Length: 520
Ligand code: ATP
Image (cartoon, rainbow, N blue to C red; front, side, top):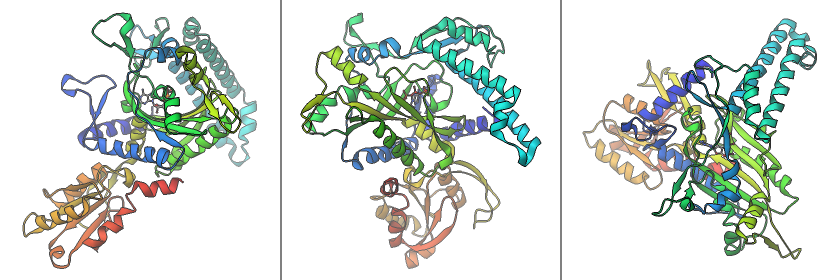
C-alpha cells in the first residue's frame, strides 16, 4: 500500500472512531481482532445502505422477495454446501516475525509486484519514445517485459494447480521459488503451508459431544437455498424469481488487518436468482449490469468501480466475477456475482433426501433451477462510502467560515446519518423555542440533529464531520419573517428561504426513492 493510501485509511479509521461511526469491539478490554461495533452515526449510515439495497432488490423487482433466516443451521447444511470439506484457506507462518499469512495472497502479491514492474517498463519506454510509442508492440517484443510475463504466467499456473489439487507442498515450493520475503521480518524463513477451515463452530444443547457441533454461517446464501421451496410454494413464485437476504456471516479469517474490509463477523446482502437451466448466462450478464448501475448511481465516481472476472472458478460455478472498488488499499472485491449452476440445490437434495424441484406448468416438467447470485458485503460498502467521502479542505471564503480547514464527509445525502441540522444562532431571545418548532415540523420526514451549543462555525464543522448535508440556522430575522438560512454541506453555500419551503427543497435531494428512480 502506498504511503498516501495508508495515511488515508488511518485517517478514516481515526475519524470513524472520533465521530461515532465505528468502534473497535469491546474496546475497554483492548478490542477483539477484526471485530467492530457500529456507533450512533455508523448504524444510521449502515441502515441507509441496507434500505437502498433492500428496496432496489425487492420493491423494484416484483419477482424478488426477501427472507431472514437464522444464523444457526442444521450442521448437514455445511456438509452439503461443501464448506466442511473445502472452505479452507492455505496459511503459512514466518518463523521470525511470527506473523501468519494466507499463502495464496503472498503469491498473488508477488505476482502483482511483477505486474507493476511491467507497468514501469512501459511508462519508461512511453517517455523515451514519445508519440511514436506503440504499447502493444513493446509489450510483445521487449525482452524484459517478456521475461516478467513468462514468470507471471508460470506462477499463476502453479498457483491454480496447487489450489485445485489441494497440494500444500507445491504451494510452499512456489513461495520458495518466487523468493518471497516476509514484509515484516524481511526473511524467507517460512513454515509448511497448511489448510485452515474458516468456519467458526460451537455446541448446541447441554451435552458437548460432536453430534451437537454446529457452525456460525459463513455465508447467508445457504439459508436461502434450504428455503427455496418454502418461498416458491407459499409465495406462488414463478421462475425466474429471486430471494434476497441481509444478515450476519462469520469467517475465522487468517489475516484480518484491513479495518472493516476483512472482518471475522460481518454482514452480507445476498440474492439468489432461480432460473431455467440454459438461461443462466443471460441472467448472469443482466445481473452484472444491474448491480454495477446500482453502485454507480450512488455517485462515488464511476471510475472507482470495475469488473474483475474470476479465472479460477469455484467448484460450483460456471461463471463468476467481482465488482471491485477503488478502496484506500487499491482495487479490491466489493461484490461477487456468481453463476452457481444447480450445485447447491442438487447437493441439498442429495443430503436431505428431499426434492428441491420446480414444476414448470408450461412445459409440464419438473427441474432443479440454476442460480445466479449477487453477494455484496455491507461493511465493505460502508468502507467504500466512508473512505471516498472523507475530504480535508481549506476553506476559501464562505461567510463566517473563511481562513480555516475542515474535514467533511461528502456522503451521498440519501445515505447520510442525519439529513438536517437545526441550529439556533443563540440560545436566548426565543430562538431555541423557534428552533424546536422547526424540529417538530421536520422530524417526521427527516432524521434531524438539534444543536445549540458553541459558535455556529464550530457547529457547522461538527456537522461536516458526520456528513450532514443541510444545516438550517434560526436567527433573529426568523422570528420576524419565518425565514431561515439553509447551508449546503459540499459547497457551503447559504441561502435564505421560508421555513415552509424547507421540506420540499430537501426532500428530493436526500431521498432514497430518488436514487432508486435513477437506477431503474
Ligand atoms: P475475499 O476474496 O475478499 O475473501 P470472498 O470471495 O471470499 O472475498 P464471497 O464469499 O464472494 O467473498 O462473499 C461475498 C461478499 O462478502 C464479498 O464480496 C465481500 O464484500 C463480503 N465479504 C466476504 N468476506 C468478508 C469479510 N471477512 N469481511 C467483510 N466482508 C466480507
